[in-house]
Image 1 (tube, one colour):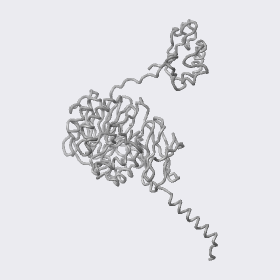
Image 2: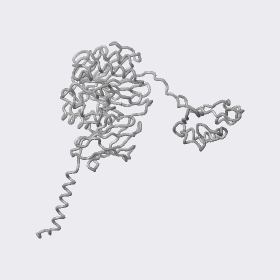
Image 3: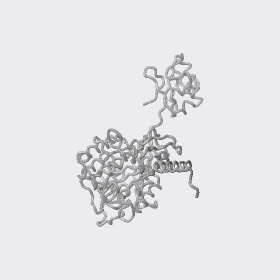
Image 4: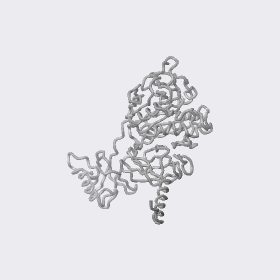
Length: 502
């Protein structure tokens, strides 16, 4: 074999060095992306890489991932904030690091706009085993495509360590977590390590309490208000000055009282009503139950017992007719993956349904004034179903536009063909049909809030009404108070400084 020339040897060495550099710079994900604190206009994407290098998320509405936001933290733990999102919109996103795409396109949906009266969510609990049952429950949840997922604790057995959070929460539920935002609450097993510090370190949750703590929080999704309580801390397991029972009770009372949502759901780990092996958490029932009833909470979700149970509507511990004021339905949904435990006592009078043989998740649809809940097995078959119905006020009609124009012959109704037309509106002012209103800059030149030529304004507005432009263009006519002639009737800081890495 003929020896290489010095030039060929140099060329080969350069190629080898380039390949080595490329190999060293290549990154792969050690934790798949997961969605956190998604709202109407923003959301967080967290992920981890095996190589420390710049990372970003490319995203866009529909299947167009055109915009890119960079990770706020360098290194291998990445957190990217997506901003400028539109409500109730599906977005695609791709994770990139070290100059290469690390995922295929994933998608998620933002929270709906205020006033939306259709919400679909699921809940699961006591699932963090990293076993086949947990994976099946997560995959079954993804198949029903909820808008958001709640958890009622014990997310990572058996001690909530950093490694258990990775292997028993993020890894088995990666497909679900990358496409549906999850809003967890902590359980007693999550508290086994450093008062649930790995829970705090791995999650990016709202913190709308005076301590800016993510252990308990609330948020709105459409016409439903959700409040997550840290029941482990409430019964003494955590920092009492931050999340003790008295502290959380005060916060919850204010939070529920201020909420204007038609539906209210509270969720946490220790069940106030259960006939399972752990028994009811009486301190939680005694201290928080009256708040639920006083402030119109409809559904309370818990876990801890590894089974499923649903109460009748309850008020002050007694069964009351459906639809009664202050009635609350309590559910235990601790059948998400851990071994089930049989009921050892007879079914109490307040218990409407219970099951200790089926693993699954709670699927809830809230449409207008009807809440439909189903406990589903991973294959989608129903274990139980129930509904709650309550009257809701009708939706406010679209804002109408009143336009009064003063002409030489007195007020001229815009759109009225003639002041003397027997079929027309009396010549004072005319209420236009409900429609989307036009911004001032959408009107014809010279047409605004005031005009030095009233007659010209009248004819211009009438022409726009005939053409349909004023009724179909989005926006609103706004005028300075001094010149108005057209009028219309009347989630979270984690902590100060840079966000912590995932």
